[in-house]
Image 1 (cartoon, rainbow, N blue to C red):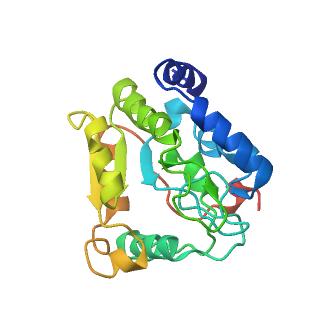
Image 2: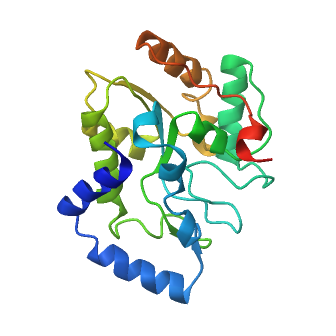
Length: 223
């Protein structure tokens, strides 16, 4: 299976009428992130058969020049947001890997699908596109990956992400859960010291797959 076949199946079970109408209006009349041609960037960088790890986010960053189609990632050179800063802190604690750039496109090319549950947002209004139809699409992505692939790692941080476990066949995939990396949640405990990166790689190796190289690979980003 590839993404276009996956999307065809999803169109048969989800009604995207409202989603299309709302997005047309919002992109025409307001400021929406990411840019229209970047909404599906996660799927462009990580082909269906190359997915090894799914990291689930909530919705795109809503600040100017941040979001460009990958959960938790910002454009090259943009200040690293607090949640991602905590992810990097845990990565350094876990594997001794230090990252400085907030662009995660190298992770995407390593087989890490950086998927938000909602793929668009109004400028400066977090969660503003929740409930317009994206959830049927992204739930179906998770479910299809679970059904069609074997031995994937799903990383679910925070309560909204953890609820998606019902879409995943845990008998043939590894699910890693934890507190959300946002400072408000992470600093209360349950995120730091959970070693998600090394645990993901250990499972992939068990499955006979190459581990993810979580290090910063500027040449793969076109820097």
